[in-house]
Length: 301
View 1 (cartoon, rainbow, N blue to C red):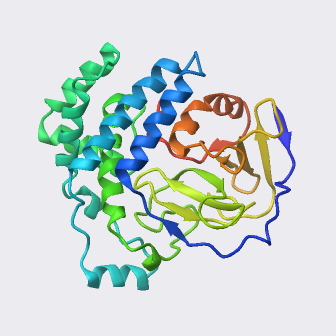
View 2 (spheres, rainbow, N blue to C red):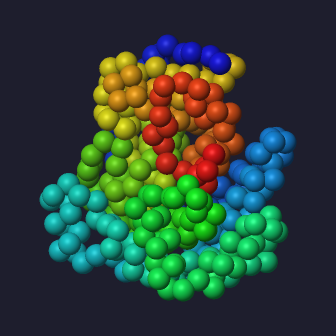
């Protein structure tokens, strides 16, 4: 384990950058799938699971390319949300049509190779009663995955990612406003992790990656993405100090969230590399800090 001092990178020199970057769903899920395939080839222990997730993400890309974007709220509601500093997409907006997206994704997942327990779960979810399905969908909309029912929620969360990303892709990025610490300005979702990138127009800009709609939103560096504190922020990594994936730790609220340095490795992808860096989670599990990032693909670990 390596303990890293407060991030020494330049903060004040970061130029003003756009608040949000909206997803291109087919391209996003395709890139994620390709990254997972690459990571599977370099991680013997997690390889089978990463390849399974890669197949899910490939199916997500196909569904995202085929389905139309969900209907957006009216112009009046969008303006009301903006005026109230609220995300324009709420749970009720994302709930509409989600069952159809789940059906389409389950169809795409049918032919892929997967462990037998996952196959049984897929079949059970496909054949579930409407009330049982509604229970699973309501849980993933709330970002709550019961510990004794992880498997069906993984598939439902994958459908929500597609559905929410399609909805977010229809918004106007320049009409979004900050809505709160660690909260996606598009859908109100929680971050998987944050990314330090040079690809959005400003060297060293930090963006949080929404676990739900996949929108990226700007947050200043050396600031807790859970509580907003700028005091007592430190960094830890596994083995090397110059790691491209670190735990950003807040001593104020006791939580930690991964930070990925795309300026060191441009191929890093928030969801894929969050799963592949499970060793960091295992290291942090032995500390007093609690994971603050949300990733349904890590539920149960």
